[in-house]
Length: 116
Image (cartoon, rainbow, N blue to C red; front, side, top):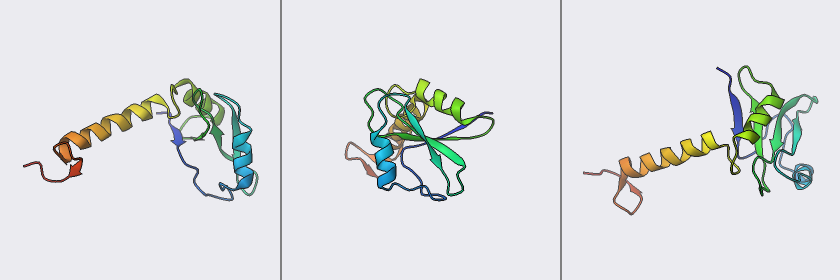
């Protein structure tokens, strides 16, 4: 099954860091679909920083998964993004948080514990 990696935060791997150089590249992104490559210390492309939704100022970080090229992964993430986070990931997050609230929290307080 083809897969895509999407992260909200940049992981520090093989020379990729959120330093001033990275922040400057982020500031140069203009709109939905704009991206730049994340290069390792040896110059290989590990992923891309992408503005995924309209009005987004913070990129998401896209990497290839299984049976998926990077350019295709970026296009898919942009196509699936109504907001910053791609809709399948956003909906899974919303559903999981609702499940935790209803299954494990005491009343309306949001305190996790025994519901008995």
